[in-house]
Length: 167
Image (cartoon, rainbow, N blue to C red; front, side):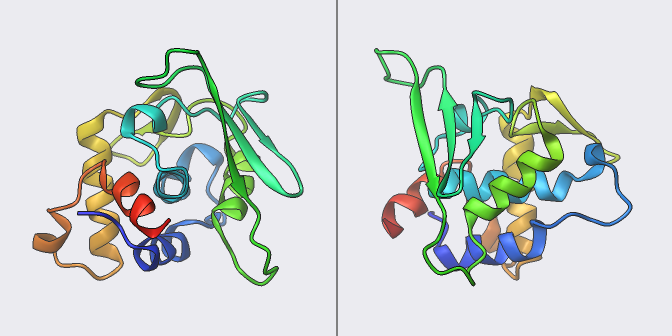
């Protein structure tokens, strides 16, 4: 099953803001929401998403776009790729660009898809395992209104499939 644009927008609305009083390492919901938005917008496989980094020269925020550099991808025989998230033309729309800029300002370095422990602490020094990410994705879908049964059909590939369908 592929995510829809409305699902991703609901996740961005529900997850992608800074929780007051929480330090950066406890902003787990911003990280999860950003990952879902980035995966959808850039049509990323889980293996690509776990390679994305916030570090300078791996993620740069420009007035018109956010650029990620992946140093390698599945089926990429020539090395790395630049992947851009454009700023929405309509200045009133909060989009994945804005979420990326916010998350970059909070996390600054490390993996975009950092690990989250049971207490909600984000560790950007290592990527989140596949199974754990799928559990977070499904929980985010339940939080935006899907039943657990409906959310259970979504996988880490759902961002890529939904983004490709929407494109």
